[in-house]
Amino acid sequence: AEREGRVGDQERSIFHSSDRQASQDRTRPSAGDGRAASSQRQGDVSEESDATASGGTSVDPVRQFQADEQQQSRIRRTVRTILAEDDLIPECKAMNLRLFEYFSQPTALRSLVQFAIGCDDDEEHKYAGMATEVLCSDVERLNEAFISNVDVLELFLGFVRRKPPLAADLVSNFAKIFLCMLRAKSEELLSAVDEHKSWFFSQGILQHLQHSAFSNLIIELLIQNEIVISR
Picture 1 (cartoon, rainbow, N blue to C red):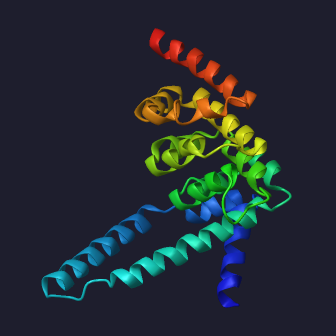
Picture 2 (cartoon, rainbow, N blue to C red):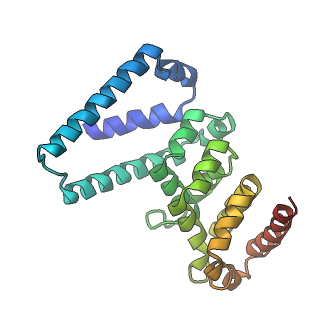
Picture 3 (spheres, one colour):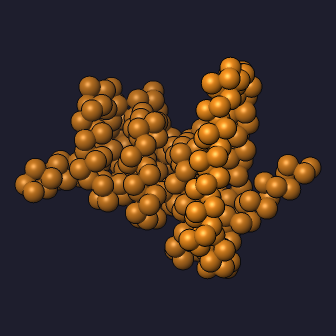
């Protein structure tokens, strides 16, 4: 119950924008705070080095794995809860920076992409549309986090390798996100597609051409590629 309470507080803190400025003021460090934090970090590094040098015990890999799994599961629940909020789209349009900062974190971003293109614990695609809207908010921080995260990119592009038939709503979501990122980060996305061209087309999009969204996507790819070449 205590853990659920902490998660609930975190979700409210992330989502609601009414306290954005106050939050930024509270979290903006002073010069003194910066020096204190720096000294603390140096002390922590020193203590860790001393522990290692003196033969301190290493972290149990099994426990570390379990802790990572619990952390990812917690973040996934938080993402799902935020996607269920009625005011999510207005918050995105209001450029809630706290919200986009959270979604730009690797695990939260991966969960967001999974919801957008369909995942095991959202079989009815209940959160797919909302996740797509967030990813298409055209916020530079989120775009940069998306395009620079290799694991997220491979997860996203790998959608086209799924066996047909694909759900029409998920195809639409994929195409919408792809085109949004293509216009915002054309060179980077074209480079990622080129790296995976051995399967992205022949084993991917071309087996799903019954979906007009993919046909339109190919045309847009050709146009953007010509634009990049001409620069």
